[in-house]
Image 1 (cartoon, rainbow, N blue to C red):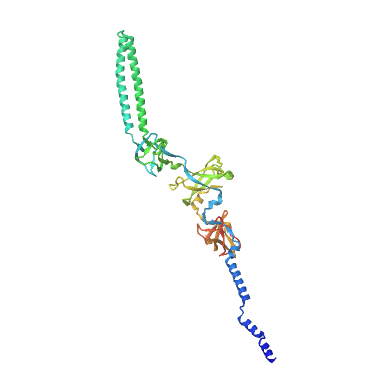
Image 2 (tube, one colour):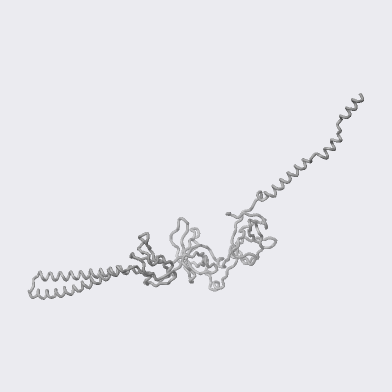
Length: 398
């Protein structure tokens, strides 16, 4: 019995020892899972923060130079400088170009020979016409003398009526041949003139459309021939043709003062006036064509230059024209107040950037910028009130 009791005692489980093993060896798996979940949530928050944050969409505008006359403008339109007298000068005859006496930019006078076609065959025809006329005139002298003799003899009954009628018919035939020879001579002279290409009016050569050696034909009747030799224009007839929307045409009237700015020289302003409103509309564009004349212009104004026309409410005085200077401006809505300071917002790498500015006088719907920005820079047109440096923005249209 004592032996059995000893054996059973040896088989008892030592619970204190199991607890010791649990404390020392069992891994803290609940803590590890908790920390892993926290790490995933943190990574998701910081990694996807921008994706779940509402990114404002903004529109950009340009910092530009504005003239004070724009405050007096009732309408602005775009157009092009166009010569009202312009021509593609071509030949009436067909032939090879053997002489071209002008190039781009040359000034020519009305009637001046610009170019000449090969004319050897025409000159030969002209010489023949001269010879035919001389022969007809000589024949007329002989016929006149013969008729005079027959007439005298017929009066004295020394010749027959048939002989007299024959002499009379001969002189009539010679007179007709002289008229025909003169007509042939005129035709040959016209053919020769058709080989001379002359300037139709006083103007300036804009383009040279053919070269010596090329075949020139009226209306370019052949695929290998040229139609026009040069294109020229009367530079004194330059005007700006601008399209005005149908809805705004009531703001424009003939004689209205205008200010013209060429895109090539934005710092120069030309004074003008509405010369004509074309009495028809373009149904495709819903616009009406207006023609604006320059009051004064210089050699910098060239055909086909793009231009902007300001239709003014009142004419600019001479003093204002001489003292006029451009102002650096932005739309009023692009500048807001922050801590009693005027600020605007640039965009760099899709992030907003606050810029402090100093504003000046108002110019219509724009405001002058004295410091902080330069011409040509892009800023946000309507910045949100809570926008700060570093905030992501999405540019409208991108």
